Length: 264
Ligand code: 3PY
Ligand code: MG
Image 1 (tube, rainbow, N blue to C red):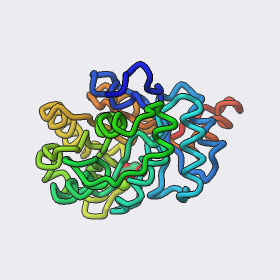
Image 2: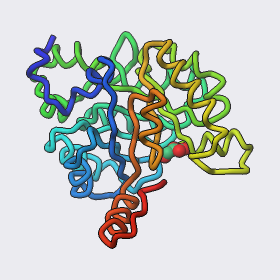
Image 3: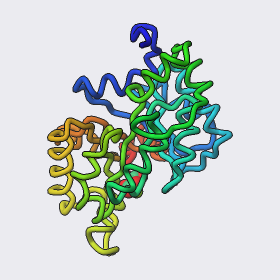
């Protein structure tokens, strides 16, 4: 087993969250490692690179993860829907967590786990070159023994089906927690009538998700903006705070004295 003191802090997110700490994390889909570096050098505790709706391809991802790790922050990657092969690659490149969108059943969750955890939990294929260099775990045997613990598999709950299957998804061995997409969840729960991540109709499902995760001994996360502090107060452990274009817009508005927020 790797000596935990030798593992880079960029790989300590899972350990910190499991120890009951919470984290505010940044979010970017800009196709430029320099911007990922800028987000990593703020007070935010980790950076999510968004390959689902963002502009990041696998070539850019390699550099963006390296930039975040150089700032001693954990890199988490949201992969496109059902692109679990990309999840394995992102871990090999040095990501320390994967967010998988639109997980609607325990079966979806098991398939996700099969790509991000090594046997016996899953079937992640061997080739963690960059991850070993960045984490400081130099021996293959040590990496194999610690990788599942060191990396997070977060299943997005953002559909009616996902919400209904919440307990079964949380029960899947290898799923470390859930991550709520409040925009899609609002669309789903209103049958396409509304997209409002701040809608009051989300209050009960959000509280239910936090309690279910706590009962299962797993992590709860949520995509947040102006509501980040409220989400943290609700009990979410892993709360994202706005995103790239919002950071730029809010910075300009603040400098012009107009206030304004990152919003969604
Ligand atoms: C959602 O709110 O649905 C998300 O997936 C956040 O990007
Ligand atoms: Mg979504």
